[in-house]
Image 1 (cartoon, rainbow, N blue to C red):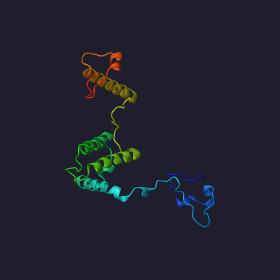
Image 2 (cartoon, helix red, strand yellow):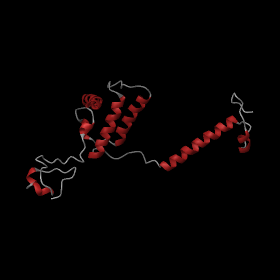
Image 3 (cartoon, rainbow, N blue to C red):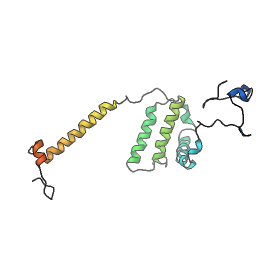
Image 4 (cartoon, helix red, strand yellow):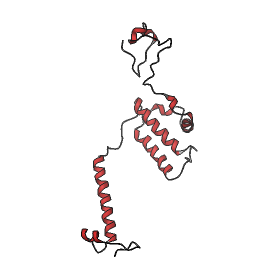
Length: 178
């Protein structure tokens, strides 16, 4: 029998003895624990979860307790909700008027659910927006920056300019061209 992996579930009746895992039980009289690669949930302070509890409580009243576990909604619905709350938060509004909960907690709730739904296959038909070609996006951004720089230069030199003239250009103490 191979040693258990991180996600394996081992039933007691499957074990015949300590040698099943290729090692002897105990080290100086102490039981062995196979926790080396396991996630430690105590790394999240309970106070960090309180705003999420509030959103969950509000949702259980508005819909029904654990309604979100039914799944079947596309990812875009959770992303849109997270985006709406994020945009309101970014505009300076901290508290959601309808729920009384923090917008940041609504963002976290939607993204946390999205992560869980992806992990456990609870999402409906995929409808993410088409993937963005990041190379093309960088090119467009670079062109926009270059365009803006040219526009600024044209404003600064309405009568035109040459590379040589701009290199020899001097400014007086007020920043005006001389």
